[in-house]
Length: 76
Image: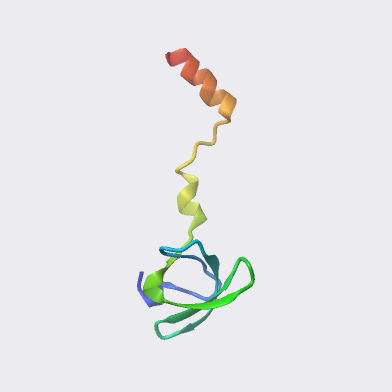
């Protein structure tokens, strides 16, 4: 992702690390985030990915577990 794709307020995740946060400052290729644990950290743009929960919405079924199980029983 190019640095211009990031905006202050974006929720991001650090690649190759278990750190999530919100962008609070962008300075050239250095992006400052406040983590979910309230730590302020700086990363290069290529170390971050924007978390877009809307894009994940279609990956999961809106059906309940009982609906899925009943459909599975009918097909078996």
